[in-house]
Amino acid sequence: MKRIVLSVVILLAGLFAASEIWPSKAAKVILSGLHLFTGMSPQQVETPIGPVGYLRGGSGETVVLLHGIFARKEHWLDMSRQVSGYDLVMLDLPGFGDNPVLDGAEYAYDRQVANVFATLDALGIKDFHLVGNSMGSQIATMMAAARPDQIKTISYIGSPVGVTAPTPSDMERVIAEGTAPLVVRTATQYQDRMAWLFPKEPFLPRPLAREWREAEITRADSNQMIWDRVNASLITPTDQIAPQLTVPSLVIWCRDDRIFHPTGAAVLDAALPDNTLITPSGCGHLPMLDRPKETGQELRAFLDKH
Image (cartoon, rainbow, N blue to C red):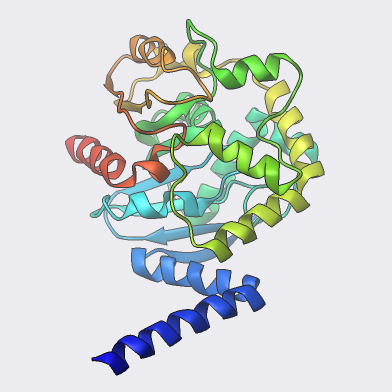
């Protein structure tokens, strides 16, 4: 027994040492393990705007998941374990994640909508459920309004861009002062952003957390450009489009969200014609990360119903 314990300790120590010496390789190994564990296969498709990476797994009706600004497809992984019985397609939105940076004009909301449709067309996906977070939710709303015959349901996982809440959020107050708190240039700023996003930062293996942090810092200038382009292009926000939507919708808006104030949940709920509203505690702007099990179960129950 002592030998087994000693062997495990030595193995863990070796893995830790390897992660310090070869952090990028360690991050890739961890990511491959997460893909394997969740049954999601990393793939790439060629589109008119270049290659687009995505994760795909499962079978049944297709569910397309769209992340928020400066996020990535892997942010849905933990939650996806609860959404069995569906063909899950998690995009790195064109120009984000591991995809190449695009020309600035491609980050306007109308272009992002066109680029997502082009990606789905390249994949041969015609009828699907839509799931979005933050910026991805604004894109999803515009998609549902543009092609209502293709979209079965729309789910807002975390607060969406484009809802005017009665009370300004902490982040909206800071943005009004002329800063961009989600654009990070240093490790300290990255950690500060985590405090904006989560009441309690979820666990992430250190090599992977470091890899993603360094990737964002490296792309800081591009991310500032993207931030400016995206925010300047919001002409018709989600809460103005919502009354036109004919598909069933789900809103999961956390009470501890500092990015968009929780009072916006009632505004969006009233605007959507056929909505289910859930307002959980103990999570922030990204409930698929800090409340993955419960969020996945709620999404699964909604999808099964429709």
